[in-house]
Amino acid sequence: DDINAIFVHGSGLVHVGNVGYALNYTEWLHETNIYSIGAAWNTRSSRGEVIGFTVLSHQPESPPETTIYQPNGTGQTVKANDIQVGVLYAVKFTDKFSFSAKFNWVQETLYDRKTKGFTVDVGSYFYTGFRSLRVAMSFRNFGPDQKTGDKYYLMPLTYDIGLAAEVYGEKGDPSYLTVSAQSVFPVDYEQRYHLGAELWMQNAFALRAGWKWNYDLEQFTLGAGVKQSLQGRDFFVDVAYTILKKEESTTLFDAPIRVSVGGAF
Image: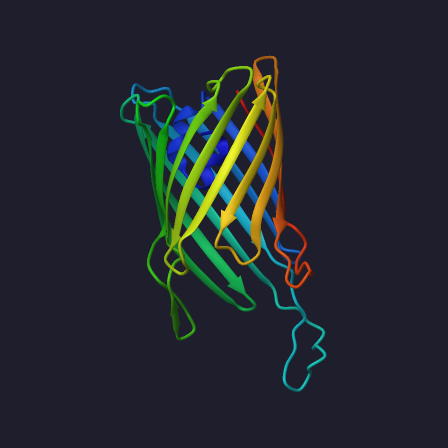
């Protein structure tokens, strides 16, 4: 329900007070980097409408080019990258229910081929009325199949539904504990589940932990955050670390690390 919701579940942005922004860097598998920028503006209209904007760039390592006749390399590299630019609209229909729609332009480049297209993400956010329990749903990457050469590829559609609630204290208290559970269903894979917990202390320091089920490498995650206010403006720094599974006592990849900075005013 903060600015980072803009990347996965935009209806949570109705909780942004005025303007929120975030810059994220992820060091992913095998020297692959992911960069993202997000910003949202609460128009403070009678319906609590929010406008958002995102840019996401996926930059994998460029491997050396090899051929049948030059198996040791041609001296060139195979460049690949992805980029997504999105515009979001979120609205608060009632004090308990909000909805969002996000339109994305996407492009994937692999060597000398480029594939372009559009996708749509929709999401909803609902307070059940039972204590602080809320339910969120999202449907991401809906769009036409893409063609590369003579082959068609399905868009990576994903349907998520999650629950969250405070089990100690209340949101905004000096200290409180939030737990969450999420079901993730991608059309090109099997059902996955996420569990998470976040503990805020003095409303300034956060400790986080998560567990992922049915992933090949990922399983446990750890994180921490700091939030401070300066002249009425909030600033935050978050760090997350994923502990990868081992194969026969060997770690196949370096653990992913994510760093996020941002704020609100």
